[in-house]
Length: 454
Image (tube, rainbow, N blue to C red):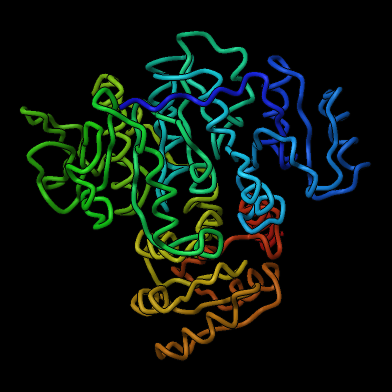
């Protein structure tokens, strides 16, 4: 049965958070209805300044989050923890809480959205898919966690426009009726457990990307991921699987050194030696994008052409510089253990790894075991450095060095490295203990590496 879209007309709406999501939501809603208020964990003066800066007027500022009894709907910025007192109060009162993704769907509706999620590879896959989709349909908007906020352009789009969205578990958690025409889930491994509370809750948030789909929609899944393979035949979507390990009767798979698609007839997509971005994980990403693009109706020749041209994204195993025979790579987007392991696998050793950052409650034993096979030295900093020390001791790895910050880590790696070594920043942690985001951390790393030659 089709899900009835949430009616937001004439609702008294509270925007919670005034980052990109909150400002975009205000911009989208002011063209529709007027009873809107905002709350942010900052002073009234800061909120007023932010609104003026973005040319937003006539908005009520809520100073006490306990006084929300008259609110009908809350639109929440994705990074706000579910334990926040305002969220708890809203839940007590039974006030619906939605994300910007849900709001966009309520405003514009079906057959407009294509979604990509997963623990790792989302940004690389979304950027590649964006290149493909924009050639296929120039009226493609890239949004979610990359590009523009999904609400930034929602009021001005035409019937020919589509949105390709990178979707985090935070954004999907507060969707209700959202239904993408085609959804891609790349992989599921433990992440953000501190935010979601359990692996089960984390997975349930990710799986909301397809909960409202029907037989007119498509769901692309990684057959090699046990959590995703378990969904086979259990969804209401048209399922398309991809695999590096098995030749599938239907789907995308690796046979020999080539990627194929089979839907009653086998068709070669491309040879893997034509791919310019390193690592088996990127073959996985590309296969997922192939499935998404084919399900959308993009011609195979166009898909192949854009894959061959693609050289990757900033902050994801990004080559920075070679200094005296030592290569430096920026993988600041490696914000969890699985992502860093994939970066280690993608690069040739000997490796000097720089890691550490915000503590999401992870343990790093698996990373240490993987790094022992190829790694030379491990330099750690940030809130998780003691967790790395403990994991190293448990697994018999002794070449670990503690530093205070990234600057000290880069300088130490430069002193230690010899010709043919590779220095890799791949923190396996979020950046929030020292930086606003992984982009700021990655840019700082590149700046520090560049200074080494001055």
